[in-house]
Image (cartoon, rainbow, N blue to C red; front, side, top):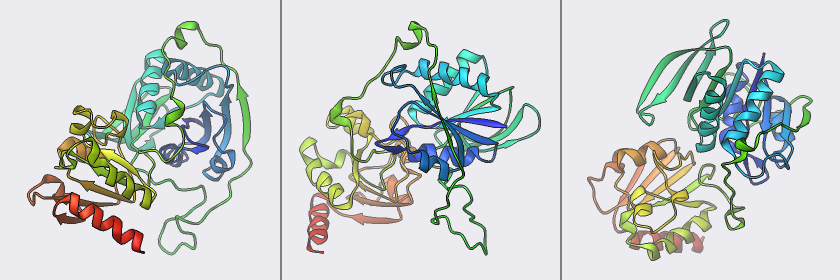
Amino acid sequence: MTVLCLVEVDGAESADASLRAVSLARSLGDVSAVVFADTASADTLARYGVTDVYVIEPGSVEGYAPQAWARVLAGLASETGATAVLAAGTDRGNEVLAHLGAITGLPMAANCTLVTPDGGRTHRLVRHRWAGLLFEDAVLEAPIALFTVATDSVAPVPAGVANGAGSDVSAETPVSGGAIQVHVHKPELAEADLRVRATESPTRAGGASLATARVVIGGGRGVGGPDGFAPLEELAGLLGGVVGVSRVVTSEGWRPHRQQVGQTGTKITPELYLACGISGAIQHIAGCAGAKHIVAINTDPGAPILAHADYAIIGDLHQVIPALIAALRAR
């Protein structure tokens, strides 16, 4: 059985969220990746068990065009006889798969954490509902299953890596994948498919993204204003991380929406999330719950985020952050 997986790119590599989706896809069949860029590493995809990569001819689709991407996936699904098409549960992944569902007339399940073939055209699945506060058991019945994978629910594990007790191979052990076939695919698209397109300006290129950063320094209302983010930027630089913000910060116009962590922003899965001056509304927690370690700095000992934090510092971030920066520089 062939499974198509939309692979997004982050810089010159496959995005971490997409590698998580590929890791889940391996349990459903032979994985073929679809990439709308020529920068995704075929070697990396091979390590994760991908057997074929369909690179969409760069001149065919410039920038991000969700309907065109969905049209390409529909054509490849028919051409390859795919039994499932999936993507990471990112903004793009969910949007493209929703378009694909509309084009094909097939149901689409978003933010799945577990998918199991149940014979014929049926898949049993578990998925996030209510921003991850609930899990839903469901059955998806369709000739081609369409779903996205919750970005914080599946570990990115290379093919052949064992995680069971007594195994000689750990999740950190690199395992070489088999031979991979790269196909350059030139789709046939109508003008209407390209009517809506989004492009990213060069000023946003490069650097770690919020969705894939290993360290995120979050700032909320307690930062005080636009100028208050300078120490957070400095700390993020020292730790090799990026700055994220709460919804109120973007509402006030202090920082751009692309930096927002939360239900209506980006869901993050870093090793460390340092939340500074953030109260922790439920929508924000929905975005940072996937962090392995949460450290909160807040003057309010009753702030909701403290109930989710591994460590809490009750104090003024304007004193704590400079002291932390000084300690890091001293070492």
